[in-house]
Image (cartoon, rainbow, N blue to C red):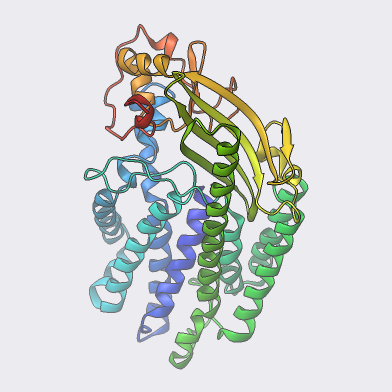
Length: 429
């Protein structure tokens, strides 16, 4: 996910943790604890992305592909990251240090916030088509959720609306609320969101705003003037945030069900087109706030023919509601070459690649070998290769490697030993 989404979700969960703990004995400590837990959870929700400082260890594009979402995005590293983050807070924030020394609730909350933020980061990154390998070193394989877009405005609304409503300063509260409305409208006018998605986002925002205003007791984000709410009202302060968390989880569940339906439709259509091929993988990319539209890349092998088959396409799982041609164009990429009205499916690219060439490069070109530790849909084009998850055949993107031009260079080092997504093609698939 993008870091704005990580930050908003981290702030929301940090506030929810704070409001789930017994209150501190005085308003000043109560506000300090709220600042502490929001800060810790927000930082923890972004902490694994510090691996970007490691990308210069390898020449582009390998540095980014192999070191981003790398070792810092593992459960093992999360233990050290939590200790480092809490240690920095202890050393650099004297007020928080005094509170943590005196308050068992604050100590417990800081641990919860750090753990929640780090696990949220790994879990949210694992929801999309890019993937993570969280169980290294026990398991170096990539795991892909394939069900949520990398920039997802549903999460902004789900956590941003309750957070904005808690801000005491009127102009700042209005500014945040206005941004939460204007950003989806701008994305819709730009073609990244369908109008139905915009309507759903605005409806969710209105519902959460109503819950926060009418059900939750008055609450103030840390740093605002005024006394803390009375103790008896403390548990009710969670209502808006809890509803936002429930909405986010419900959205993920809806996306998961839609993804399974999309995968089944694609597999059935590929089987109808060529029953001799063995379908190995379907990499699905979701659309923002839209469980109906999907883009995808399929990987199939034809061992008898010595080739593997890559197809890119678009799919609407409910073409009667949203035709595939109405899916947001800027995300979809090239216009569909043809459309199957029965399934709401349109093909945008069709590539047959040589298994012998892929396997030869794997054995004889160490740069290409390293690249295969990332590539899920490897397409060869002259002396270059691209992962088709990120662009049409022949296009250049952040995954494109000039393996021919790199052939005379020293082999890359250090190369993380991630599992190769297409080991099934390299080992006789």
